[in-house]
Image (cartoon, rainbow, N blue to C red; front, side):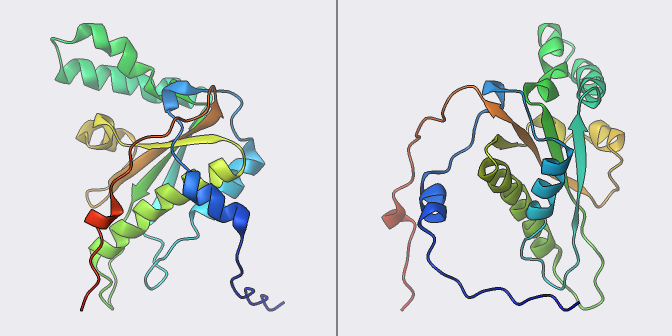
Length: 199
């Protein structure tokens, strides 16, 4: 069966309003429930619908839910204690980072060797867009979402624990749950200072 062509773009006021007012929900202000298995599959399916030069899919997902959040927490606590022997009072806090939300999706930037030469930089950018798309999909389904990196995104031992190869990097961790309170507005940049019209 041939796939149907996409319809031509049309103005969608609800979508525009959502994008105009969207902001992250703090992971520390989340609770349950989180998305169920079917919703989570849909969130990741939407998350993967990103610009991707030559269709390389240079990213992959690691999902943390249930007891898996405690398991990765043990590694976080151990590595933090090892790297910060003078901060013993923070070990328990670090070990509980993944417990802030019911579901956490790790997005791994996984560049692909391409004979036609798609630059690695473009592949990394595609991974970043996946992170943002996961946030949009989660919030569109009525959940809160926050894209975080924090120290464990850059730690070599944690990378090994997560099975990352030498060429892979964590693009971020997307925390998904039910917000306890609305997100508050925050200052935005003056766009006039950020825009130049080429002439």
